[in-house]
Image 1 (cartoon, rainbow, N blue to C red):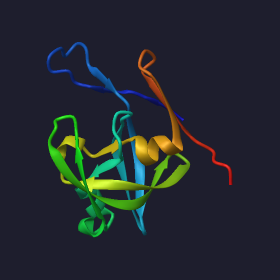
Image 2: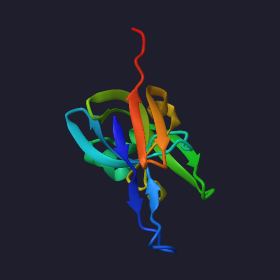
Image 3: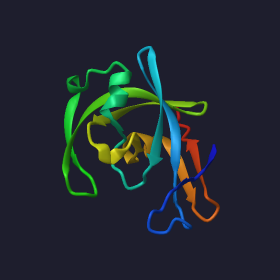
Image 4: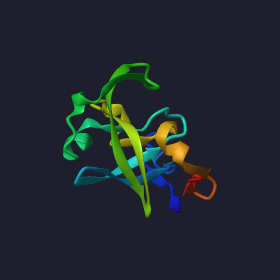
Length: 139
């Protein structure tokens, strides 16, 4: 599946917007689901989503295992890990994600563990496109 980069306003140079690989994924937990705009982030170790998303899915945040993480700002944050299903187009995977109150993650970040392990990702900034292909595993 190929996706276009999203243009983000550049306040320092409005004529030259930033390009970011944002992807809408569907998170499902039990009978509830939520579509979440998420940054495909090769520099992120984990998949993280704002705790509001977890609450919309009916997840009791603090029932998950606690994980302390540190982002690029250096601030230590807490996330609670939970297993969810994540769908991109017609591909669906099960993975552990962290839910956090941190505003620094936006609505969602798709990182190495879970997402990049189960999808092959290629970026072409020059073409303003990125591709997400589910890795076929032997059964």
